[in-house]
Length: 362
Image (cartoon, rainbow, N blue to C red; front, side):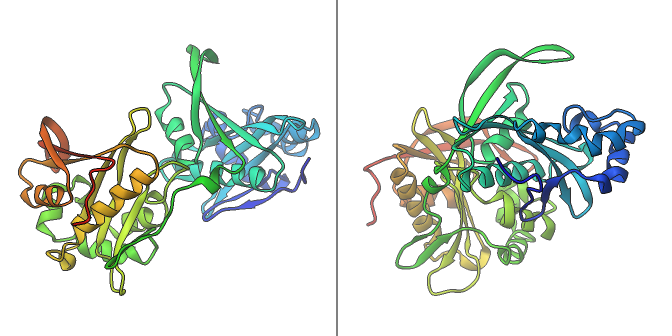
């Protein structure tokens, strides 16, 4: 149903069929003992089987008409693999699976590859639905599915089996057209613009975080902040993983100028219709009312998405943020003990909330 030379280019990866030229990198993966996690099922466990596998074995899935195995290449070389299988062409359904070499994990490669393959298959009309299944106790794989825009759909009890016995599987699905349902990525008021983060914001982020006493006091992620981490946030982590997600926004004055801060969703509970917001403001943008205005804009955005309640958790010692919450129309509900991570440990937090219909622009 598609070309055996299928190649997909993402921001950092090339996904393409395995070929004879991959022998050296496949050998290195086998010698690392990573063939069971980084290569597709059926890959050889010994170097003597590489030639036969690259010439024939790895392509059997495509020849059978049920899917395809693709090598996952980054700038450093082959970092893993991703596959489409169990294709039901008449129904327009298939499943995807992946593996990343242990030495290349925690870099977002799995999410980027899954998003890229699913986007190609759904975007070209080849399929109408792509599924992904993950062990219920594999939190990393579950997070990959969520960040790649898949919706959690149910639990298959005992449907997976590994060396240690049966496992429950979480089923995720993504449909053609889901990407068109993503929330607005730009929100404007008379003074501010909330927009997606861009690469150039990383430099302002580093300057804002380094050496600022308030951010260092309340934000645990600020310790040892580097340009590399800022770039990863601005180009990958800050971007919404899928439809229905409230998102993360850069705050910028509408008349231009540098990054003023950030506001975004920390947690979502779709069953309860509740979302938690968080924000920070750069030192050069404080005492201008930007925090209050940005929180109101982000809250209204959440209500537009169908949430009925938004809340903020503010450390009991953070008087400035408490003032922002109150000015934005949030109501103080109580103290949550040791509920907020701060540098060096945990802090008691004031819980503020606002309901749909209570927001005021006065």
